[in-house]
Length: 280
Image (cartoon, rainbow, N blue to C red; front, side):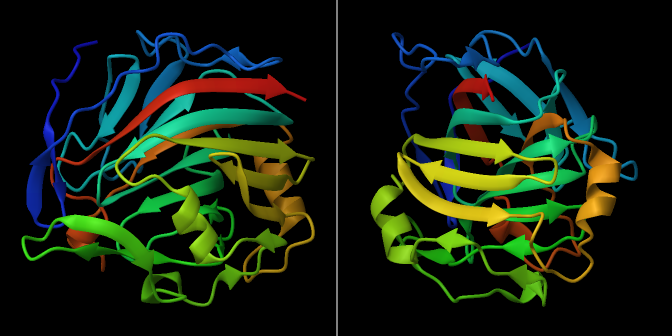
């Protein structure tokens, strides 16, 4: 597959050129884990459109040991989905999204990537990272905080700061987490403009989900016991099963999206590397 070149990316309304560090040459799978990404190809992964109405496969490429996800058609997102399925596991993955870029990691998802449990990486205004979303399975959100960006006079992001506790697009579907850190802890742990390492634990037929970021336990949710509008754990189990795929997301932001370019900037990408899994 053709690789992309290094590029500048939009932060706020200004384009900045940044040096993107490749995967660490000596990085090896942690004990008990095996790799889902060989650092050179997309073998073992398949792109899928977000919807049949907008059947773009997106732009998924490999460069310098990174998977790079972008919109191929402006405003239209996609998923990159593993060919293999997994039941109970721990996943380690590093992410480096541009600002703004609304992305995430889906677990126990179907082969198309559009139904499942999403670990949010909403790296954008009013965003949240580390919480969860029922993607096509009730459309509930479980998150504890939001953040936004402080910008300089030229529109460049200086740092992330606490945002309002909720955003209008989430409606009444927000449910409490079983464990959550305050936004101040997240902002201390998160490394803006750099690589951040996620560890995601998914255990149980209707999964108990746990997220760590850079070694810090960020969020935890037992979806089997969760109460939310439109959420039926048994129906979700029957639809998804105890085993599913893992997917990476590039979000859409069409003309009817209330967030528009605040969800995904023109030319933005998300980068992924060092993807390992341990089956439990």
